[in-house]
Length: 209
Image 1 (cartoon, rainbow, N blue to C red):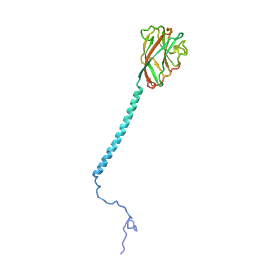
Image 2: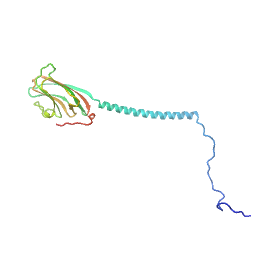
Image 3: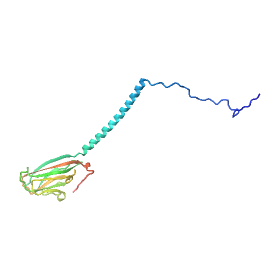
């Protein structure tokens, strides 16, 4: 008896080829033992320690940078005294010097006269800020009137200055010229100033005369 092939595709193969099936395994995963839990806990603590260490290092670096900026921008007080014997002719130069490179002086006070406040001292004095010192004893040249900051018509004299009223930059000198003094007499002066880093002013001032 003949049979009719009723498959959708007659003469098709009787099988569909090899198939790969995932093995059916209902065995549950092995429970973590005490050793595995210890290892996991140690790993967590190690990661936490590294994170905390990095955070502390970053905070320490930031703190040190802040302290360095604060110390760099903090002004200090400075002042010196100078003295000289009035020459037989000409004028007397009393030079206070110049600020260190990268700093500036904000002068707060200046005193000039004889060796003390009770000493009679003839003459008058001019206080100058200039990039050039006088080259002779005959006057203030090349500083002159363009560099004059203050004057004293009688000695001794005490003067005080406010913030940024009398500034000396690191390429300038602060000095006194005494005129009309007594030859052979000792004259003395001192000044006080607040010293700032140049960049604390937000820039650099250079005065050339």
